Image (tube, rainbow, N blue to C red; front, top):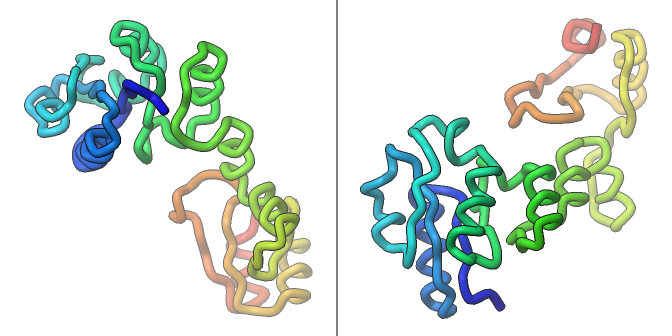
Length: 183
């Protein structure tokens, strides 16, 4: 059990973490940007550390600032909440290398889950039901159509990494599939 954790997130996410830590008797450090100086999370936390200006890429997304705040406050672990650095394997790896606990998946799990093909293969190996699909890279529209015919339409098409669901397309026919496939 940790005696003090640093919360590398903001808003309602941070407030929920602080409330849980209070129930568990764990002290909290809230990092914050200039825009969040008057936030409820900053007010509620046992300690607060300013990490930069309002834009997340100048504050919440800077691993150096988070690590510096951990060192400054003596926190033993970082809780990333979700978003921001929570799915950043490099950040989790850096914390591990510096002897700081990361409250979340290990870097290898983050890497594996960041790639749709790898994560689906891991799920299948663990006996988790998955939807039928192709478990490799598709290089050409012709290959995509061939695979789609084998699986059967309609087909959902998704890039194997990133995108947050924005790149999903549905193909109902060979022509839809060819149009939506890699070029």
